Length: 257
Image (cartoon, rainbow, N blue to C red; front, side, top):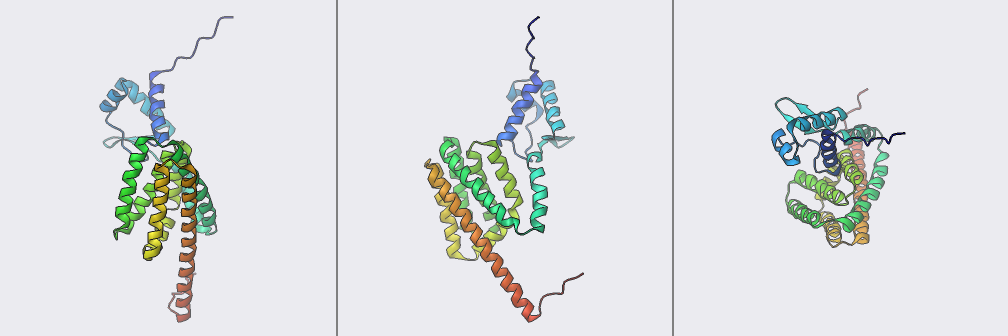
């Protein structure tokens, strides 16, 4: 019986695999615009027809989208199917908030632990830059900038863990709970002492990761999420007291049926 000939890998498949790898590892993020066809073909060392075929393969998978006049963008397919249903569920089932915080604590402590073990010099340089920007924004009164930078800080640590699932799950989770992060930070921003505590927690995570101390990084991340959980509970109780006081005063509008 003749020996089976090995399958020949087509160049377009190799190029598609390279682009897919960049999407998985987060080098290419949802919404990113790919370089021009000419520049990307030169970078990858392939012909433009092979590149076009590779891009079409990823368009068919839903990882890229191409629109005439606006170029080729990375889609959010790896995140959207997780984010959309859970955002709806959260709005209808407040008890899920605690479950999400437990999951976030587990995910972020493991991410911080792995980042402390695996972060390369380039990861530490990026983390240092993001942490410096975080300190600057936290010293300002721009709450939206604080929220954005806080989310970015945690995502950079997740990506420094060098685990593609942790990176994508972290990005998805942050999108799901973005509104709750905003509410928590707004609550803390109004309390200078607790705002300083939040900053010191970020500092502890940053230092443990950059000094490659996995256990300390995991412990700092767990403590941070526990602080966030307690803060959200305090905020919810405070809001309920406010509504209760308004009801006693008769200032709440009647519930429409």
